[in-house]
Length: 338
Ligand SMILES: NC(=O)c1ccc[n+]([C@@H]2O[C@H](COP(=O)([O-])OP(=O)(O)OC[C@H]3O[C@@H](n4cnc5c(N)ncnc54)[C@H](OP(=O)(O)O)[C@@H]3O)[C@@H](O)[C@H]2O)c1
Image 1 (cartoon, rainbow, N blue to C red):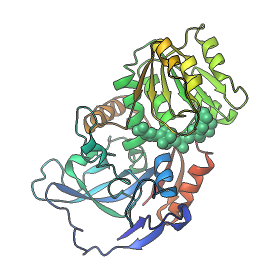
Image 2 (image 1 turned 180 degrees about the vertical axis):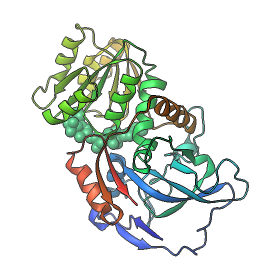
Image 3 (image 1 turned 30 degrees about the vertical axis):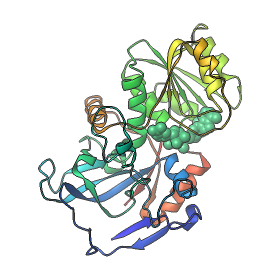
């Protein structure tokens, strides 16, 4: 059995493809666990950041990267009745966040961070830490759901409570934002999306984006958002930029609107008084619970939603997948097939 491991702070090129004996202790599923033959992983900006700087995250070596995988159950441990060999499943980002609000216990169960991730041919996961993949999705598509899709769902549906007729702002065309675009459309909302690329904006329009803005050509893009909303601002912003985009996001969100704070792509400073003056609800979002994942999958199945996969890499070329993410040329998701 092969697995990719973070073994140093040497970044993407220092990732090691290791041979792990299938007969090694712990290789079978323990009580309450399922063993999954992984068929695909999807990568997130967070996986790249973890590989680049494992020291800041106090990771022990070796540590398997990635939270998002999909594959087949090949064996079940004692006491597991919900799954059987042959079931197609995806990993839950948090192995111990079933329902209710996030907790320290949940945060200490994040795959590819607090605990080993899923970039391996086979892994053991808690039976409560996997969910069935929607029947119409491939393994590659199913693998895109655990982090990017669930974070977007949490922002749009759980926190944003978006309803038909609302306007939702999405920043950039990465994994989270494209899922948020799809979910906002599913809920009947009008969508405004920004990108640094005209070609990506054309792809966003093809996915149903109502208004597209090139933030590279229009650095004061918040004014274009205000113009598109009659000066009022959007009901919900799915904020993946972080401190560098937040001042403009606050300006682009309506009085008493909501900002789902998700990303850390940019640095900068904000004036908290701007949040207070507009009575904005600024809510931190950390992926989501297993219950949200099951709700999301029901909606994905009902609407036949297809995740947008930009590029696919072979298992042996995993390093190239992270380099592609670093280059930021992608639209939607990057997948590694196993
Ligand atoms: N809190 C959570 O639970 C959670 C979950 C998932 C992700 N995240 C965070 O959310 C962020 C996005 O993650 P991801 O996996 O979707 O990343 P990704 O797929 O790598 O998306 C990156 C895209 O963001 C856009 N972008 C970069 N700088 C921007 C800026 N200044 N203004 C507007 N857009 C900008 C670019 O889009 P264009 O190329 O179109 O310009 C870029 O391609 C990351 O910080 C990640 O760590 C947090």
